[in-house]
Image (cartoon, rainbow, N blue to C red; front, top):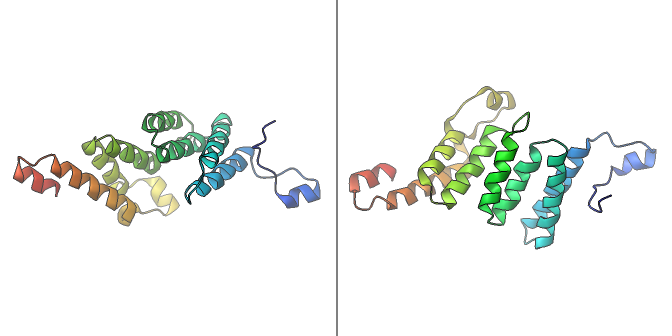
Length: 172
């Protein structure tokens, strides 16, 4: 047994009932809590524990596990591991939402200097429409984080065209 195992809710324990929350979700919530601690000056320990929790989610057959591992790996600057986690997530049924994969692919491509690919990924988040977005009531067309990343990618791409002013202007 793991020392990381998230505990069932207190009300369930008091009533002598097993938790109604699925095990994968308890692990995932536990990992998210640890990861969130990592966003406010966290120690490496929280990210290590979050990694272990998300690995459990993946073992339990949920794409949330490798997607959240990608979050941890990206935060740590482990770009190859981020890509590998996203590739594993894509093999799950159901796969993770397209916009999440596009976001991390865009970030990784931007970091690696693959700016045209990053631009394509960020634009897909802002512009693509498909039934899952409508069903969930999501509209990312005004998401300022995506818009900012896209703008930075365009700016960096424009700098690559310094010898061709017309081409540079297209990106700016």
